[in-house]
Length: 557
Image (cartoon, rainbow, N blue to C red; front, side, top):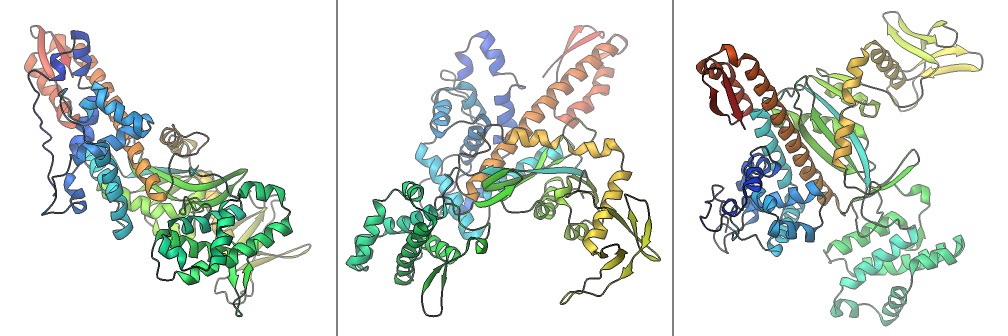
């Protein structure tokens, strides 16, 4: 049964935390600028619990624990990089953490650990069944409220991405196949195992006693291929014998078999060539969502995370979108969804996007027809010929000699509708397609932009650094795309909170300095009229006290 949390909990006279703290500790505990009070005001209090109503039975069952508190625990966990055991310990005994979650009294009960895990499980199952990410809805709802409160300008954005490895070991091809087969066999009950012949059970039992790493180390290429064909035959018997099995382990078994083997017309099992296996193939049976990517010297089996944030002359900019895709997802695929999500959060149309050259593509150009795409670079080394389409046709300028050559239309390639051009060179002909022409145009546009404008993208790299601050060697603690996406939302909520907290402190300091400069010549009513709009814009809680009548005023946040 779903029940909303009463976020205006009462402080007990005898067990209230503030009643047992000394003067110095009490001052910090009640300081509205301190992180725990800001966390409660800017995150926990903003959570719309009705989003999670779909996870609970509306008529039967015990009332749910505080969803706001449980989601707040998820955010705090990633904010400080704690393990689950550290999180529960801090929530039980750390007064600031308890205050951040809305536990004002020493005897206020914390939800049980099983309740915390049950909510995460239900969120995952709901996402698997419907595709709806409740943490995404929560992130957007909280950030939307912050954007409105602090009047954030969302017309200009910048984005960047980062590769991160999943919490899995680097398995060889042999280990992936063997572990997948054994993973499925272990979940079979006795009745299921008896459906196999005694010979097959004995063969699989022999494999369970094997140490695959040692087998790979001791065997040559021919021996490994022979072993893989042997395991492939066993795998096919399991695939064929359990067609009605709907478990995740069986689905993974079928996937790995189709990725690694070919079933010939005469029902023979053949091992696929390595070149035929795609980068999105299974990298580990323990994390089927992770994929492989090689970027320069970096080899990653995991995911790619893309962060989008606002950019303006105002001192406060917020993260508006974060996407976790598979590692082989190109950056170009993040652009459209990031812009759409930012528009939903800010309620403003995006006018300018600052990004590096990895984000540019013809499809994005078409989508961003009315958006100024400011690229700080373009992939690949500069070509020898600079191409420019003029009313008279394509002009190719040799960057080495400065010679301008009029290109002519060439014959279209077979099964292609795209026009291409050519010029005569010493070795024959040089051909140019539409991508080459477009790349030259992008390079010229970049050169025409002021250097200050190109540098506006750079600060998003600091955001990426903060996002991955607790990663060790760019390797996460989690497995699965959903868990990584939840981690990313929690980290971004915390980063936004830190920015808001710093902004409010700076605004308070500047306001106080301004008041001190003019207080000698203004009356109290004039001061209030001059500076009260700052309270409305930034939600600053001013407490005004006369220090010297109509001369000086002391402002406390």
